[in-house]
Every structure is written in C-alpha cells, then in structure tokens.
Length: 356
Image 1 (cartoon, one colour):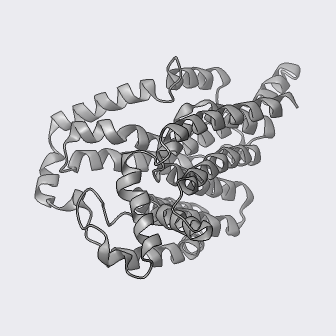
Image 2: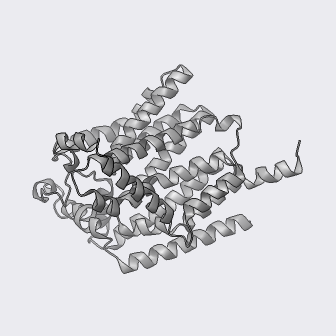
Image 3: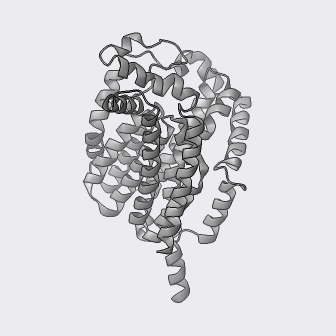
C-alpha cells in the first residue's frame, strides 16, 4: 500500500507540473502553433480541402504525419470549437498512458514493486510534463516506442503471436505520429527478422499484419506531400558524413544534454547509473531476450545521430532545439529495459533472506 501511495503522489505531482506549464502556455510552444495544432485547424476548418490550402513551406512541414493533428481536429469537431483544452487534454492522456504503460509492462516483465518504482521515476522527471505541455508529437511517439518495445519483449516471455501483431500496430502508429517513427518501423522489422532466424519460424508476418493499416495510410499520405527538407541536397549530406567537426559537436552536445536531462537538481542520468550499478543485473532466463528492445533503442539512437550528421540546417541550432526531445523519445523504453534487467527490491530482500 505504501508503494501505491508513493506512485499516486508522484503522478499527482506530475499532473501539477503539467497543469502549471499548460496554464502558462495554453497554445503549446512554437511547433505546436506552426505545425501540429496548425494542421489540426486546417483539417477542422476544411476537412475535405485542407491539403490544398495548407502553406507549402519549410516552417509548416506539410510532410509531417497527422496522428496528433487528426485527434485534435476530431476533438474540436466533437466539442464544436477549436478550444485549447483539447490538445491540453490529449497531452495529459498521453502522460498518464505512458506512466501507466511503463508500470504495467515492467510489472509483467519483472514484478509489481519494480513496476511501481519505474512509474515513480518517470513521474518525478519534470521532462515528461514539460514535453507534454509543448503539445508536440514527441510524447505520443515515446508512448508508441515504449508500447512496441515492451510488447516485443513480452512476446519472448510468453510466445503469444498476438503480442507481435499488437507490436506491429504500435510501431505503425509511431510512423503515423512523427517521421522518426518511420525509421523505428524499419528497425523493428529488422529485429524481428533476426529473432525469426533465432527461433526458426516466420515472425515477420505477424508484425507486418499489425503494421499494414498504418503503413497504407502513411504511404497514401506521403504520395501527396512534398519530400522532407532533410533530404534535398543528397551530395552535401554525403559529404557531411566525413566531417569530424560535426561528430565532435554532436557528441559534446549529447554529453551536456544527458547530464542535465530530467531537470533534477542533480544529474538524473548519473544518479540512475549509480542505482543500476548498485542493484546489478538479473541473469534469469526470462531476461535473455532483452537484446530485442535494447537493440531497437541503440539503432534508433544511431539513426538520430546520422540525421544530425546529414542535416542541411544549422547543426548547432538543431541540436539546441531538438536533441533533448529526441532523447525523450527513447526515455520510457530505456527505463523499461533497465528496470526489467535490474534486480527488484523484493528480489534483493529474497537474496538477503536466502543467501544460498
């Protein structure tokens, strides 16, 4: 009961932080005005002709997927006005859903005590409330990343193919949330292909069956939108892959961002790394397939690094404006992977009571 009380207290504080941030910025932050909510307003105002009247310029990004914008527009249609309460409510739903999913996934992969600890940790990071209050699509994307990775891991424990189908749907929805989800979908397919070889059975079909509907929607959408501005000058992008200065700038920005990530008075990353060393990994059989979500995380991170290398935009500005959000995409799934591997408090107590 004490653990449940701490979880509820942490969630309540997270809601308070989110409410304060949302009150200060009821319309969200800049990209919410110019991209996500702007798209929603075009769709809400002219559902049948919105694509013909949207601005075709770089700041609007007409190629960005529409899961968030469509949900906001549908909410406005239901209530009958484009009130700021709808995108705020949507952000709060994803905050609570992410916390709840992390708890449930860790509880199923490890135990309830570890699940509650994971929920407390993510709720105590003001970054989840802050990202939610921006009204960007980064929070929903992080949710779908977590859902996909957790479902794939749980499949390796339970061997239920329905989990793969649902994982495919979650991965597909990530691609319909942000362009970063497109690389995530490909990475998931590669990971399941490797797992299929290990298990000597076709698992890719199950993942694809869940992914197929979002993929069709994405393909239809991409055929009627302009290409992404990151891939305009391919020759320049290739040349930038060999510039050592870009590697140095990205790496230094990564270190400084990680050190301050989470908005704790002390470095959350260092504290969490210390906790991981203290609790140590559990090498039981059901943790044997943790490579699956971990490899997905690492490959997605590599994709982000490469995008920074090839971007035609000002690298320093892009790192300043987006690196913390890209790291946030990976945060919930990272917490899941770590907490599933680490010994839980109950396992530590069992070891002390039964040293043999």
